[in-house]
Image 1 (cartoon, helix red, strand yellow):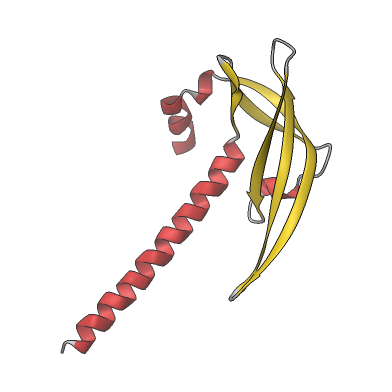
Image 2: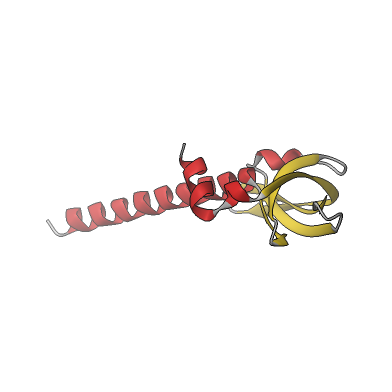
Length: 123
């Protein structure tokens, strides 16, 4: 699978896996033309192998499986043993890649329509 290749290329497969706990979560709803969406700002906490605690904030869109997390939930993460503040969450990357692909497809469709309209107008 491509994600495993990406993890090997980036070295994430060598990072240590642990469980992070959701300490805080704050959901905001946005109303925009064409629809509504929600976003969750969460704070995660984990402990490294030295017993040091780490905290970080992440932002999760409502189309991610991580959006369902509530306070006290735990998720698997990987952190860099050389710098435990650096972390990687596979599901977060997958969500961001899906959003990028949707945006690119939309952009290509719009560009195609504009090119086609230009060609039809020039005839």
